Each structure stands twice: as C-alpha cells, then as structure tokens.
Image 1 (cartoon, rainbow over the protein chains, first blue to last red):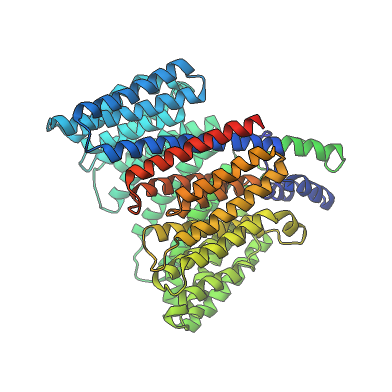
Image 2 (image 1 turned 90 degrees about the vertical axis):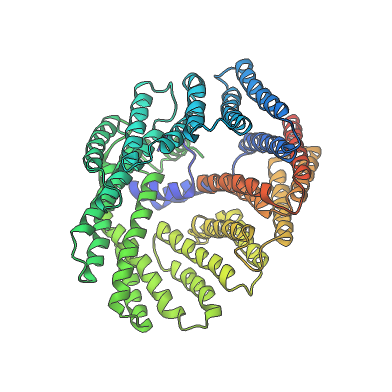
Length: 304
Length: 329
C-alpha cells in the first residue's frame, strides 16, 4: 500500500489487525476514515465525472448519428467522415501535446478510427484479401503512434489488434504457443523500454494466458503440439525470475495462477477416478496451492 | 483519508508509536484477493462433487454434511492460524453453504426454491466471521435472486430493483452510524452485494431473461434516488443555488433520455455512492456497467437511432455545460 493511497474502512481494519493497534487507536482511525469526502474532493471528482460522461455522451451521440445515416451516405462521404475523424484526432493530439491526457486520448481515438477506415475500404473495394491482413495493416499503421504516445490504453489497443491479427493468421494447433511467444516478446520490449511503450502487465498477462492455455490443451489431449508444455515451463520459470527481480507481486500472482492450473491438471490426469475421494484430494490440492501462492507472494517486499 | 495523513494524525495523538509500515501491513492487494476467490471456488467445485456423492443424493444428509462443513469453515476462519486454514475454511464454508441450501430448499415447492435459497444464503452470511467470505456468500445469494427472476417470474424485477437500491443506498449512506452500532459488515458486504445484484438484475432485464423485466418503473425509482442523492450531496458541498438547479435539471434530463435503459441511471448512482464511501470496487464496477448499458442503449429498438443520437448529444452537451457551471460556482 502506498502512503498516498486513499483508505477505505476495510483497509483500516486490515491495517489495525496486522499492526495490533489498541482499541483507542482503532476507534480514532475509523472516525477519521468514515468522514465523507471533503467538498474540495467532491468538486474534483464531479469535475472529472462530468467531463468523462459529457464527452462519452457527445462521442456516442456522434457515433449513433453516423450509424443512423450510414446506409444513406455515399462511399465518398463515408471515407471523408472517417478521414476527418482521424485527421481531427491526430491534429488535436498535436495541438494539445502528448504530455496531456486529452492529447493522448485524442490520438487513441484516431488510432481506433484507422481500423474503421480499413474495414470500410475492405467493404467498398471487396479485395478478397484474408481478414488478418486488415488487422495487420491496422497494427502496422498505428505502430508509430503507439510507440510515440507511451500511453497504456493505446498500447493495449495495439496489442489487442496484433493478437487478433495473429489469431486469424495462425489457425493450427501451435497457434496458442506462437501467440504466447509474441506477447512474451512484447512484454520484454515494454519492460526494457519502460515507460516508452505503456502498461507492462498487459502483454505479460496475455502471454501467461496463451502459454498456459497451450500447455493445458496439450495435457488434456485437446491440441497436441509436442512443445507447448516445455515452452510454458521455460516461460514461467523465466517470468517468475524476472518478476522476482523486479519485485512485482501482481505478475508473480498471475504466473502463480498459471502454475495452479497446470499442476491441478497434472494431478487430475494422474488420478484413477475410481473413487469419489479423488475429488476431495483435488479440492484440498487447490487449497494448498493457493495458500502457498499467497504466502510466497506476500513475502516479496515491493517497497525495497 | 490518505494513509500517511492517517498515520501522522494517530502518531500526533500518541495513539501509535511509528508511522513506518511492514510490507504486508495492510491486508491483501486486489490481485491476491482475486486469486484467493478463484482458488476457493475451484476447490469448492471439487469438494461439492465429493460431498454430493458422499451424501448419496439424500437432502437430509446433504444438509447435515453441509452444516458440518459450515461449522468447520467458521472455526478455521475464527482461529486464523495460517493462510492454509483460512483458505480451507473459505472453501469448506462455500461448499457447506451450497449443501445446506440444497438440503433445506429442495423441500420447498419449485416456485419458492430459488427465493428460499437466496434468503437462506443471506442468513448464513451473518454467521461467517470474515468479510471476504461474507461478500462471496452474499454474491451467491444475489445470483440466486437473478435466477429466481429468470425462472420463477411471479415477482416483478422493478420491485427487486427498488428493494436492492434502497438496501445498497442505505448501507452506503448510513455506514458511519451502522459501523459505530456494531454493523461493521453493512457497507462492504451487504451494501456492495445489494448494488451488484441490482446491476445483474438490470442486465438480466435488458436481455429479456426475465418475464417481468425492470423497465420504466425502475428508471423512475433510480432517477428519484439519484436526485435525492445529488440534493444531499449539494447540501454537503455547498455549491451556489444556480449550480444546484443545473445539477438537478441535468439528472432529470439524463433520466428522461435514458428511461428505457435504467442501467445508465443505476450506474451514475453507484458511481456517486462509490465515491461517497471511497470504494474503488464500486467505482470500477459502476464505470464498467455504464459502458455496458451505453452500448446496450444502441440496440434498444423503442426509439429510432437518429433520435437516440440527438438525445445523447444533448445530454453530453448538458453535462459539459453543468461542469462549467459547477467550476464557476
């Protein structure tokens, strides 16, 4: 917990329990925490909420308006509309500057509209190209923006587009392995260039999900590749080592959950299933693994 | 209140000695809670299969077995010996609850089965000594409420929304009083549980999973609730009267524009309540539900798309004007 973090009554109870505060200290801490937010805090909150909701209302209003008139518009008008949106977003980002939140959001909206533009192009000109090329083109076109903006949501959007493109491209039994590797590389890049790209946890979680899914599929004979389980093992070992060095408890928890899934599957496979007690053993095994995970993660001190 | 401010204040009043904290001083971070909850439910699933097989499909044995597991769960959670016992206690508790509900409520008629299960879980939640387990039990009860509305539809969803909005709002707004009177779980467990269940009921209503879905009546109830909340907050913040009038007009306008999708007004209300009680969970979920219901609004067929776009545009404009007005005030 950070010193600047806002406390809820629940946090105070946990804090008081752990540090074994006196009853007087507990009562005073609760009195101080249960006071409703100050008028200045409310003003700041309402200011942000009204800005966000007002902007959302305007944005959805415009989107609904375009959708309502979409069939009546000529191809040229549609292209012009989307071009104006992309240009407007990019220019707004340039004018406002990428160091401001509004500027970075403008660029994110423009990046999203690039995808809509490519989809329209595919619809109007019916090139017959594979669907993955649309997403690959989208990802390629917005890569410079994703790299320049260093903005979490834009980086996440770029990663999602890349993942969709790769999912459409690799459709064999090895797809999950390649996607895991791809996201692992993105994670390493995000860590190495931090904070130039964006959230590091997002590609890490994607990589964990894909590699764990690949290994699980192999173990339950759903999709066999021959190398998914060793890949998962090496990736998890490397990931845990890196996360321990960085003292990232969140990433360790994500890796830990992957380990719980694989170990439980292995245990399930090893059982004969001739007795209902097997379910009891499996349930207790999950409890044990989660306990070990919580205890191990708690030992890692993020503040050092 | 921020952590360092609280610690400094307590140290100044000589109630604590040091302001430095050990790494694990403040309970579990959210990702560990998620891992614990996921683990507890997976373990519960396996334990439940074992228990049902062990009880040999007899309701009576299931009830007895469940009551035993609940007792063990409570015992382990009370003793708090180690993480293993806590986790085992939570899994045993959840398994026991499911078995007790199965044993007790399957004797009722089909119509009352799901409602009685929800009520039974709500009563059971009072027995568990730890808040996280209580919240999971209350959320399970909430799922039974949604199930009852979907499959046993004699009660209109509007009535359930009214009840849940009242319980959630009351637990949040009166949390200080409730806390000092010993109801420490009121806001984090029952307030959060009621508001989340209300959102799920609205989701189920929107997708027509219920025969008597929440509609205009719920929109009216929620708009009136948010109006009352805003009036109360304006009193507390002491804005100028003109800004207050603007705020109330905006809420009425938003309610009028979205009267066919009551989830939007519910999201606004939960967002305000979430900030009032400083619950990050409620604020996060309110934003998620707002986005869900705004997207759902697109597919609503009662109003033409063009009209919807103009209404949303006007509502957005109104909110931005209100922001300027509040800034000036």
